[in-house]
Length: 391
Image (tube, rainbow, N blue to C red; front, side):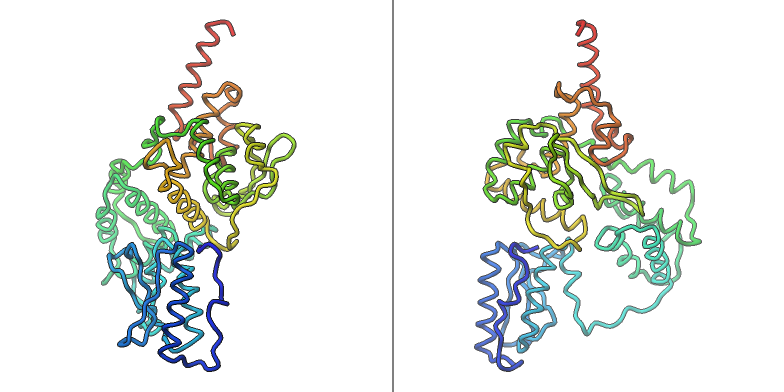
């Protein structure tokens, strides 16, 4: 979301719904000045030859283009207000081009493939999954473009188009799995088994202990963040190991023992996302005054993905300012990894077993072991050494 949010007051009220060319240019310059101050990567563009408001992306859209039409007319004051809303939505989207849909675009045709994906969408809704804006949503749009009869081989080729070492391969297999459950479609069982076995993507195996911040790194970073709201957001991640989007999901600030309560959006179906979380260091609660923490304002209707993207974007800005000292490619998620590592390596936390740590972090014991095996092993080695020494 643009910092400061959508401000309809920026769009000047005109005595007529039709704007003169001069007023259009004034409106464009006013809006661009606002976007520049917010640090947005988007600008509004108009030309004498085009009746439409266009959006320019300074870094380029996902298809490599830089300027695209919104389909909104320059001579309408309501259109300028909608343009600002649209840019606000684009700044929060992983696929901003998907929002630039011409209102006059033809309605999608009903095909065997759209019928298939409609069944998948219904199945995902029935499971309670928040799939819109996620990989499932993107895959449904891709499959809707397929022509001809529905055939398992087309889906197999679609999966094989992705690199087997990437998240994209993992995501396509997940979509295919739900598609098989939602419909009567069947694929070759041997092919499916082999494809899963040969898919080698594992984001957590790429976590390098040397790239996880130690306590000094964390303190230096959080102390450097001068914006109070963002400092609180990153401090909550560091002290409680929260996922990026969960900084917006804290329902109760630290109690007398330092515990907080979180209502996470990272859940499936009707499973509750509530959990109580212990701090990894009590002194950090006071250091950053987390009992009076405030986080950046946000739209509660935003998805976990969009909220997480907002945190990641702000963290990247901090990294570009040189505040992230532990890794050139550091991510906000590193603060969560540091929490997990501390639970297995710092003496005042090593009495916790894996199930307790997993509960604090909001995932299963199996997931925790898979993600943090190296620190668990280090913990066990230290404990064994202490037993041998008679401690």
